[in-house]
Length: 191
Length: 191
DNA sequence: CAGATAAGTGGACACTGTGTCCACATCATA
DNA sequence: TATGATGTGGACACAGTGTCCACTTATCTG
Image 1 (cartoon, protein in one colour):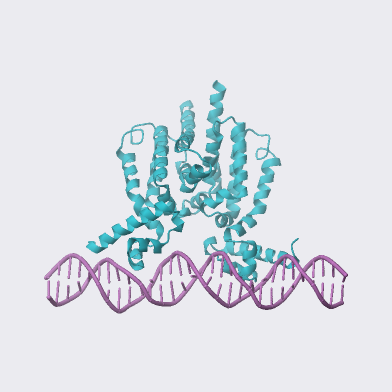
Image 2 (cartoon, protein in one colour):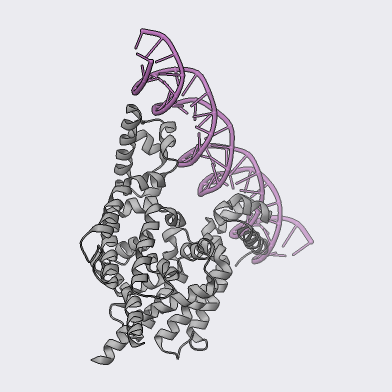
């Protein structure tokens, strides 16, 4: 069971980190900054969060869980009931929303390949794989990563800031990827 | 004009870096390691290459230029002449080859978003954009990034090492993305 | 309510890697 | 071979990381 002071400090740390991540690029936030801002010693910080990424993951957690819930039990087309292609498009739209609202956190959380090792990524992976299977797409395993790759936070951020695309444009373009499912459905129809 | 000792040291540095990058993960190669192995002082190293990435870029350069050449003036379907969808598939296959042969270098060169700022990336971008335009695909600018995203070295490496996919599987799956062009061509045919 | 004990705290410390700086060496030119 | 420009190397200052441990604080127990 967690002690009262420990709980208080956890809350402080998360709050301080959220503030710092919001005001500047996550790479420029040091563990020391977070400890200082939270009014907490280094040791206390490291006790729970061994690095920046784990803090960002903790902050993201609730938002991601919310989306996961809607994917599993929400209304169609995001939740069950709609055809796979539509659900995939809805998933993309929701992810764009998530990236847009919390891109700084996501960037802080996911440095390079570490992103593939988070629980959340595993969930997105399983979800998309299930949609591909439901659509009868061949070799879904190989396709999943490719369909998820454009959701890498660096890619999103680049499109937004450097290329100046709007979230709507990005979501709409991602929806075009559902053609990969669509065609294989059409092919099956011809058999 | 470059002095003789300068040229000699540049060659030494590149050689040492290539060896080190090949034997362990690029993040674990420090600038100091490279300087030591090259038998060169820190200052000398930093004079030309301000960071690891720039060394990896230099090493990659020739391989990338080779592919660029083949894209511009090589035989179809990689070079000009073939239909856009086939050329895109050929491009994917060639990139898979490049990633396979030099993934360690690519990983060393491209840390997160810095990859978007290299000249080579700009070239891939322009090439794919041109293919999309030639196919009459609407809004090519937004689509380009999405089609290039699965070529991120982290994604490739993850598919190869963790998921155990073969280069052939990956290339083949990427080729399926050309469906995005294909369908829009079909739609145009119906007009 | 004290005393015991486990859990948690904070900041000093050692360490590693970065990038700069400049006295000195080396090369190309006359 | 003298000379200035160019290049060299390693010492240095610095920033960030992660560990460690003497101390504090909360919770449990009689």
